[in-house]
Image (tube, rainbow, N blue to C red):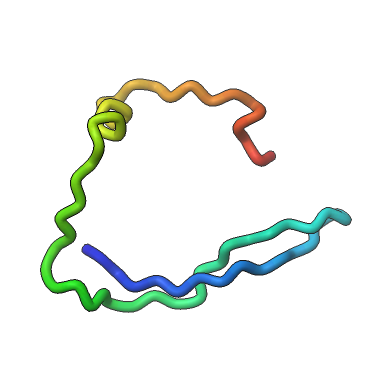
Length: 62
C-alpha cells in the first residue's frame, strides 16, 4: 500500500560529532487510488533472489 510521508532534514550531535538526519515527521493515507503499479528494474529483481550482498566495513556508518 502507498502512503504520504512528510520528512525534515535535522542536525543532531552525539559524542561531539554533528550528524544530518532525515526524520519522518508524519505519514498518512496516500491520495493515490488503488495499489501502486511500481515496476522493479531487472537489476533490483536480481538482488532479491536470495543472493548475498557484498558489503564492506567502509559501506557501514558505524
